[in-house]
Structures are given as C-alpha cells and as structure tokens.
Amino acid sequence: MALYSEKVMDHFLHPRNVGVIEDADGIGEVGNAKCGDIMKIYMKIDDDIITDVKFETFGCGSAIASSSMATEMIKGKPVSEALELTNKAVAEALDGLPAHKMHCSVLAEEAIKNALEDYQSRKKA
Ligand code: FES
Image 1 (cartoon, rainbow, N blue to C red):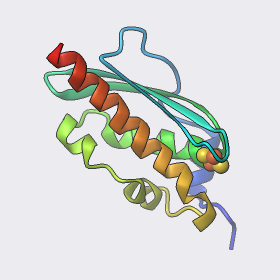
Image 2: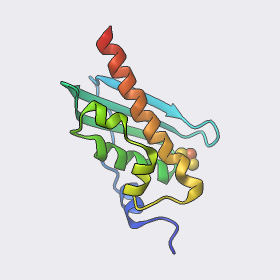
Image 3: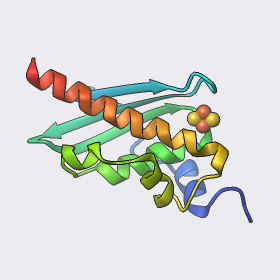
Image 4: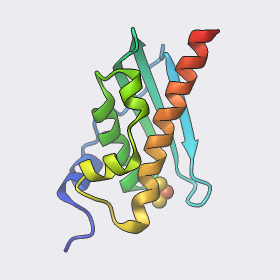
C-alpha cells in the first residue's frame, strides 16, 4: 500500500487556501519543537462565521496537506464548529495519515484554535 493516500498527495501538490490575509480578524501560529515545522493560519470572521481562511506552512508534506484540508473544512463554518475540529477528523478527511505523521495534523488543529483564541481576545478588547 502506498504510504500516502491520493487525497494527501492531492492536497500536498495542490494546496487550497495558501496565502496571507492582510486584515485578518484572527491569526494563529504554532510550531512543532521536534521537527521544527511551523504553521500560520489567518482568518476573516464576520458575525462569528469564518468567511475566509488562509495558511502558510513551513513544513512537511503531511503538514501542508493537513492545513489545506483543515482550512477547507472550516471555511464558511461558525466559530463554535471550527473550535471542535480535531486533528483526527482532518486525518480522516485525508483518508488517513501514517501513524508517525499524525502529529503533523495536530499542528493544523492547534493553529486553528490559536487563531480563534486570537479572534476572541481581540473581540473582548
Ligand atoms: Fe513536522 Fe510533519 S514532520 S509537521
């Protein structure tokens, strides 16, 4: 069996939502200390709905595929729903990741949570 699913390869080779949102309402950045990979997520949020989301990932193919899939999964969704997105759901949507690559999808979950926390703290300010 191939190590990576077709979906992983597709999102790695043709990542969706790559880029920066200049006037983002929430920005999340996380890194993995072990591999040194970094992921940054930008969100535009209107009335608690994520209207746009972009990412920059300096990392492995699984991290890029996970960010691409995760951003697709939360686009157009309410903040409350995006907060519930787990790395497991992202990996499942990609038709699985090899066990030693699961941590790459954790980066996507954490970056999204981080961006939403940033959004919520800005709202309070
Ligand atoms: Fe670091 Fe994948 S090996 S995120």
